[in-house]
Image 1 (cartoon, rainbow, N blue to C red):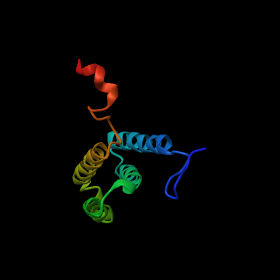
Image 2 (image 1 turned 90 degrees about the vertical axis):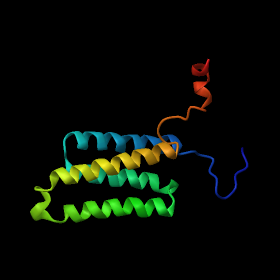
Image 3 (image 1 turned 30 degrees about the vertical axis):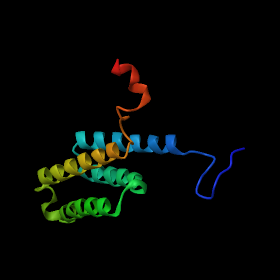
Length: 122
Protein backbone atom coordinates (compact mmCIF):
# COMPACT_ATOMS: atom_id res chain seq x y z
CA UNK A 1 0.00 0.00 0.00
CA UNK A 2 1.26 3.52 -0.78
CA UNK A 3 2.29 6.14 1.68
CA UNK A 4 -0.14 9.07 1.68
CA UNK A 5 0.04 12.35 3.51
CA UNK A 6 -3.00 13.97 5.10
CA UNK A 7 -3.79 15.95 1.93
CA UNK A 8 -3.63 12.99 -0.42
CA UNK A 9 -6.06 10.22 -1.14
CA UNK A 10 -5.54 6.68 -2.33
CA UNK A 11 -8.55 7.21 -4.60
CA UNK A 12 -8.35 9.73 -7.41
CA UNK A 13 -11.76 11.21 -8.22
CA UNK A 14 -10.49 13.07 -11.32
CA UNK A 15 -12.24 10.89 -13.93
CA UNK A 16 -15.65 11.18 -12.26
CA UNK A 17 -15.08 14.88 -11.66
CA UNK A 18 -14.28 15.51 -15.32
CA UNK A 19 -17.32 13.44 -16.29
CA UNK A 20 -19.46 15.87 -14.28
CA UNK A 21 -17.79 18.82 -16.00
CA UNK A 22 -18.53 17.18 -19.37
CA UNK A 23 -22.18 16.71 -18.41
CA UNK A 24 -22.47 20.37 -17.42
CA UNK A 25 -20.85 21.45 -20.69
CA UNK A 26 -23.34 19.30 -22.59
CA UNK A 27 -26.21 20.83 -20.61
CA UNK A 28 -24.89 24.30 -21.44
CA UNK A 29 -24.79 23.39 -25.12
CA UNK A 30 -28.36 22.04 -25.14
CA UNK A 31 -29.88 24.91 -23.14
CA UNK A 32 -28.02 27.46 -25.30
CA UNK A 33 -29.31 25.80 -28.46
CA UNK A 34 -32.87 25.88 -27.08
CA UNK A 35 -32.41 29.47 -25.84
CA UNK A 36 -33.57 28.29 -22.42
CA UNK A 37 -32.15 31.19 -20.43
CA UNK A 38 -33.20 29.83 -17.03
CA UNK A 39 -31.73 26.39 -17.67
CA UNK A 40 -28.60 27.85 -19.24
CA UNK A 41 -27.96 30.07 -16.21
CA UNK A 42 -28.33 27.07 -13.87
CA UNK A 43 -26.00 24.97 -16.04
CA UNK A 44 -23.39 27.74 -16.07
CA UNK A 45 -23.60 28.09 -12.28
CA UNK A 46 -23.06 24.31 -11.95
CA UNK A 47 -20.13 24.45 -14.36
CA UNK A 48 -18.59 27.32 -12.42
CA UNK A 49 -19.07 25.40 -9.18
CA UNK A 50 -17.05 22.56 -10.74
CA UNK A 51 -14.20 24.93 -11.65
CA UNK A 52 -13.97 26.80 -8.33
CA UNK A 53 -11.45 24.45 -6.65
CA UNK A 54 -8.95 25.56 -9.32
CA UNK A 55 -9.75 29.27 -9.52
CA UNK A 56 -7.99 32.21 -7.93
CA UNK A 57 -9.76 34.90 -5.94
CA UNK A 58 -9.46 37.48 -8.74
CA UNK A 59 -10.97 35.02 -11.24
CA UNK A 60 -13.84 34.34 -8.83
CA UNK A 61 -14.55 38.05 -8.46
CA UNK A 62 -14.61 38.46 -12.24
CA UNK A 63 -17.00 35.53 -12.79
CA UNK A 64 -19.23 36.54 -9.87
CA UNK A 65 -19.55 40.00 -11.43
CA UNK A 66 -20.80 38.37 -14.64
CA UNK A 67 -23.34 36.33 -12.68
CA UNK A 68 -24.42 39.49 -10.85
CA UNK A 69 -25.14 41.21 -14.18
CA UNK A 70 -27.22 38.23 -15.23
CA UNK A 71 -29.15 38.10 -11.95
CA UNK A 72 -30.05 41.77 -12.36
CA UNK A 73 -31.55 40.96 -15.76
CA UNK A 74 -33.30 37.81 -14.49
CA UNK A 75 -34.83 39.50 -11.46
CA UNK A 76 -36.53 42.11 -13.60
CA UNK A 77 -39.50 39.92 -14.56
CA UNK A 78 -41.20 42.80 -16.30
CA UNK A 79 -38.39 43.28 -18.80
CA UNK A 80 -36.90 39.76 -18.82
CA UNK A 81 -38.69 38.73 -22.01
CA UNK A 82 -37.94 42.08 -23.66
CA UNK A 83 -34.24 41.78 -22.79
CA UNK A 84 -33.90 38.14 -23.84
CA UNK A 85 -31.45 38.92 -26.66
CA UNK A 86 -29.19 40.81 -24.24
CA UNK A 87 -29.47 38.02 -21.66
CA UNK A 88 -28.53 35.44 -24.32
CA UNK A 89 -25.50 37.57 -25.17
CA UNK A 90 -24.44 37.73 -21.49
CA UNK A 91 -24.91 33.97 -21.07
CA UNK A 92 -22.90 33.26 -24.21
CA UNK A 93 -20.11 35.59 -23.09
CA UNK A 94 -19.97 33.92 -19.67
CA UNK A 95 -19.93 30.41 -21.14
CA UNK A 96 -17.05 31.32 -23.44
CA UNK A 97 -15.16 32.76 -20.48
CA UNK A 98 -15.73 29.59 -18.44
CA UNK A 99 -14.69 27.34 -21.34
CA UNK A 100 -11.48 29.33 -21.79
CA UNK A 101 -10.86 29.04 -18.07
CA UNK A 102 -11.35 25.26 -18.28
CA UNK A 103 -8.79 25.12 -21.08
CA UNK A 104 -6.30 27.24 -19.12
CA UNK A 105 -6.71 24.92 -16.13
CA UNK A 106 -6.05 21.87 -18.34
CA UNK A 107 -9.56 20.47 -17.96
CA UNK A 108 -10.62 20.46 -21.63
CA UNK A 109 -8.27 19.67 -24.47
CA UNK A 110 -4.84 18.16 -23.83
CA UNK A 111 -1.84 20.44 -24.25
CA UNK A 112 0.26 20.04 -27.40
CA UNK A 113 3.18 19.09 -25.16
CA UNK A 114 1.21 16.02 -24.03
CA UNK A 115 3.18 12.85 -24.97
CA UNK A 116 0.11 11.46 -26.76
CA UNK A 117 0.70 14.12 -29.44
CA UNK A 118 4.33 13.12 -30.05
CA UNK A 119 3.38 11.11 -33.14
CA UNK A 120 1.83 14.24 -34.66
CA UNK A 121 5.15 16.08 -34.42
CA UNK A 122 6.94 13.81 -36.93
